[in-house]
Length: 439
Ligand code: PA5
Image 1 (spheres, rainbow, N blue to C red):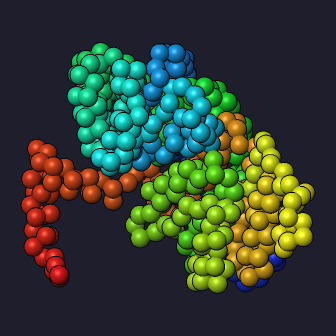
Image 2 (cartoon, helix red, strand yellow; image 1 turned 135 degrees about the horizontal axis):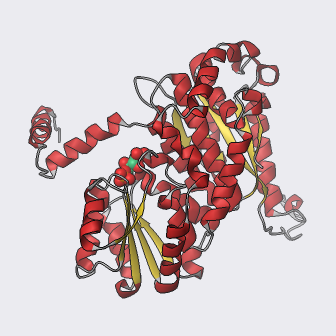
Image 3 (cartoon, helix red, strand yellow; image 1 turned 135 degrees about the vertical axis):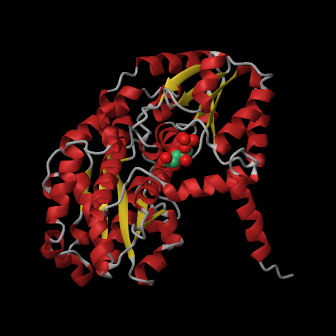
């Protein structure tokens, strides 16, 4: 089970930058109300909490078909339809594409160079393509689908669709063409959808299995049932980040895993936190990072820059492997490293960074992940989702919509000539006239 050490968030350890009992008292009523909303599933979006009980038989069958029948697997999707799957792929099967089949590619950003590179590596006659869009209408994903549809000669069999069970263009197209399709539960928001077929099919394709991820999520949910913050780690985490923002003006939160395999997890978390909470002038800014790499890039800023950050370390209890550092170069300045190991070094770096930040009055907390495996990844997903939903209640915002993103989509539709968006196109053209260009 994950463990959180939050002593470096508290005033008795780090001084006035830290939280006190009085800070927690200010949210007592809000936290109680949040718990009522969450445990009573007062908003449809809280449905992500019930995903551990879903029926996974159809996605397992489809995953098996892809695993057995394809040499390449191309996942098309963006935002919540890509970040979770990428997290699963990198955390649980790093370097898969050098080692195993099917080789997996996640294409999200409609960068033409990336697609060209993918196409230069895959044999299209042995490729399965999963079009993943909950709404069934996101321009990036649908454009990629159109390109692949043509490249595959208009055939239906290589394609799967992962989308809303009833609504959207993609669902209709799947129905009309007989394309194989999996449902994304309508009430589960895109960025909360990693434990739906959006992420679970990929888990099956790479042979990890959906069950272990869901079992981990279920276990975490059981540990997060209580209203009391001290007995509910997800609430505690969400509350501390909220309080740091609201009471201490620490409105930047850095997610810092000490494992290359968890770098995409920090990006997934940042989308979850940013898109869920950044509205009505509220929210704090998450930023993805990586230890030890960013000790040599960002740490100076965190230590001595503006006192506006909270750092969350993800410490790895057991890397599952280790590499001894040989006793060579003993009479040089770095002979002291010999006889230790790389896991020892990375862990020492992590602990030292915690300590020096705390010593400088910079709040930080540490989540220990005993091992990076499917069960613990499932725990992490549910933990961060619940923490975010809880923080949404404390901020008093709807953590499940994204009105700011929709507006940008509407301008894009206008620019690309979509029917009904002519006014948006006119607005963009008008705005260009106002721009001042200087040589
Ligand atoms: O969290 C969200 O709802 C968004 O980030 C979506 O995941 C993203 O816009 C992609 O949407 P869709 O899956 O409908 O293509």
